[in-house]
Image (cartoon, rainbow, N blue to C red; front, side, top):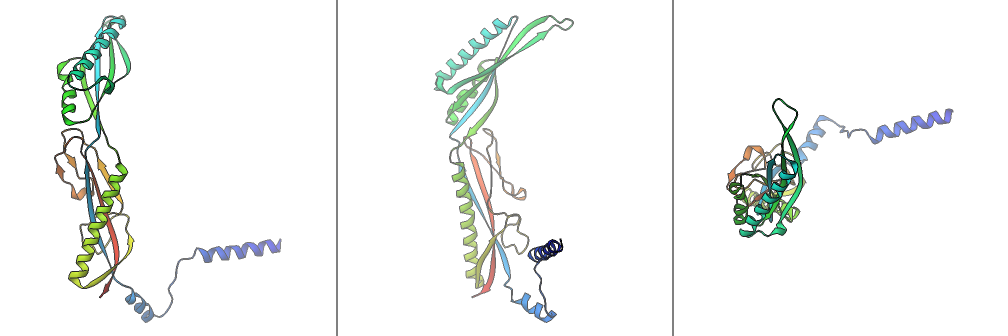
Length: 260
């Protein structure tokens, strides 16, 4: 039992040594000399931006029909979807790019009675387009038929990760060009020490609130402006093309500063 207690005490002492904080000891003059010998640091930031257009857009329409019986409402809905497909085909969108989802039905009752007055059938239709011209041609279908309602659009992109990496690479190159300019103009040597994850705390020599590796992107709805999706303090607007997606990245690199 005594041996076990001594073992536990020794283990606890070892753990306290392993997890103890680093400690500096010495006279005040020695500590001052140590801190003075540490090289000063500066943070250099860089930005990158890559724009890409969508490969395709998927428009969603709701086809809604109503009739006294469920059978008639279903038939009317099918006939309207056929008219919609025919119109889209005339406008250059083949049937293979038109997908029909599951339908839903809703019963309508009289105001003062539980008797079913009519049935409404709703069916979602998704249409894939590959250009702004096809987008406009498909979206106009909701103006042609009162039973067809435009719900929204989803843009799809390929090689997202590649575009993000390009934005980060541009940001790093931008930061490196600034480093070279500082070295040349100020007669300094900047040695990279680390990347900073999050806003740069001190010694900013480039736009503040930068962060390493963070790439954000927003896919806007068609025809709307896209906002800068970097730090909120640096927002800007620009007109977008067909489903344009903008990848923006900012990096901050901490350098040790030495005289040449």
